[in-house]
Every structure is written in C-alpha cells, then in structure tokens.
Image 1 (cartoon, rainbow, N blue to C red):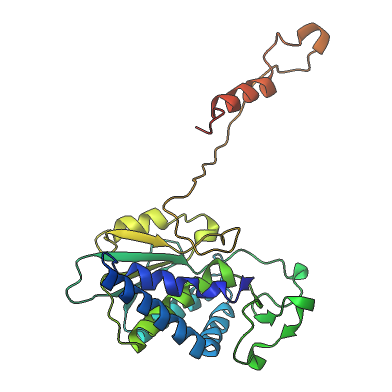
Image 2 (image 1 turned 180 degrees about the vertical axis):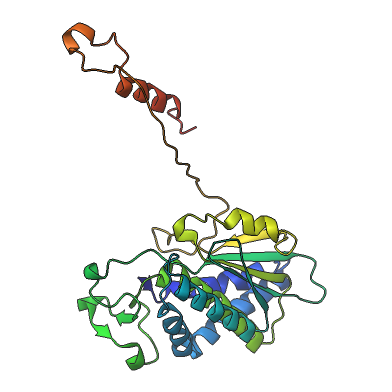
Amino acid sequence: MVEFKKLMLPFVVLATCVLSANSAAEDRTAQRVVTKVREYRAENELAILNELFEFVAIPNVASDTENIERNAKHLVAMLEKRGLAAQILRADGGSPAVYGELNVPGAERTVVVYMHYDGQPVNAEKWDSEPWQPVFRKPKGAKEIEPSNLQSPVDPEGRIYARSVSDDKAPIVAMLTAIDALQAADIPLSVNLKFFLEGEEEAGSPHLAEILEKHKDLLSADVWLFCDGPVHQRRRQQVVFGVRGVIGLSMTAYGAVRPLHSGHYGNWAPNPIVLLVHLLASMRDPDGN
C-alpha cells in the first residue's frame, strides 16, 4: 500500500539533490525547481498513476524468472523514454539488474539512484483484491475505485493497493517522473545521473556483490541515493545519511549427551541455554554497541 501524496516525495528529493544552494539566488532557483516539479505533478497526476498501475501489474517475485524478465524489459523502456541510455546487467543465475544513465554536459559529479523492482511473495488468500491488479481506496470507508475511473484532482489521502506499489515500484515511477518534470520546465540537471534497479532485493540480494564488482567502473559515482525505506513516523519528508545493518548466523551449543537431573547437575554441568545467554549478552552493551 502507498499513500498517494507520499508517492510524490522523490520528485522533490531529486529536484533538490541536483542543485546546490550556496547563496540567496541559488535558494530562489532551488525553490523554483521544487515549484515547477510540483506543478507538473498536479497537471499530470493521472498519467503518472497510470504508468505506476501498468508497472505494478507485472508480477515481480524474484523466483518468477519469466515475469522478472518482463519487469526488466519494461524498466529499460521506461528509462529510454526519458532519454537515458539503458541496459540490463546480469550475474550467473541471478535476476537481472537494470542500469540507466543520463550524462550532463559540464557536470563534474555523479549520483547513482538505487531502487529495486522485485517484491515479496504473495499469499493471495489474505488479500481483499488481486495482488497485481492495483486498486485505489479512499481512507474513509475504504471505498474502492477502479484505476480507470479515477479523476483529477486525486484525493491526496487515498491509498493504492498492489504488491510492491510502495516497496519499491512507486519510487521508481516518481523519480522518472521528476526527470519528466525537469525536462518539461527546461531545467537542466547539474549532475550526471545513474539508475541501478535491482531485481532480487527481497530475496536477500544473493548476486548483488557479483554485479557490483563486475560493473564497478560503470557504477562509479560520488554518492549513492537509496530510495527504499519507511515513511517518517510523522509523515515528514526526510533524507537519512545512514541506516542500521543486520547479520544472520547459525550456531550450535553443545551440552550433555543425556538428560541430567537439575538437583544433581544444575549450575554445574554445562547448559547450552546458559552458554547462549552469556554469549548473546556479550555481543551488545547497554549503549547499543
């Protein structure tokens, strides 16, 4: 599910990221960019949503090879529509990544925008609607509206329901539409722009390292912008400069080979549970380190 008005946040992010604001004049220029992008969104919101609806209608579970290929080809067409040079990057046995670049004459810096187009597996029985047939619902009473019946202006508090509409296909459409808005306003980018769109993030990115190493020259940049994360708890726009990581492991703790009476052996014979408790406690201090 994605809120319609939150779908538009990447427009502003891209607009502000491609500009510097080191003076009052540049501040005014940046504000003009934001204004123009928002005006474009308001004037073209139905076309923007239709592109999103078409995109999320393609099933995208990483293990579904045929449809993952359909997604990749669809993305290439979406990138080329905006004038980006696009290609598919592959690793042995993995889902393809989609790459696009837009070189700007005179630009000295390069930004890579990361998003992923694959989604979580679906248990269709738990859905009130078809997972890959997007629907629009108004918040009060959850009134369902078919995409073809939407009218402008679209209720900004409405919700779009479909698999991967928020994680992570909406940001892709939003970012590409931001390029449309800048081009329509004849506002040039000030950086070279690259897109890296992964096809197996929800499957643990097993081939990501291989693709990055294989194409490290192609993907070189000054900064990466990751458009894949939760909405701020207060629904505010945000750009974060770091996130938490996670690591998984399997471990076996050994103890007695047969049952031992607690009254005779308790707190004396090695207990695997106690060993693991001490181990886990040693991994993190009270300050979270």
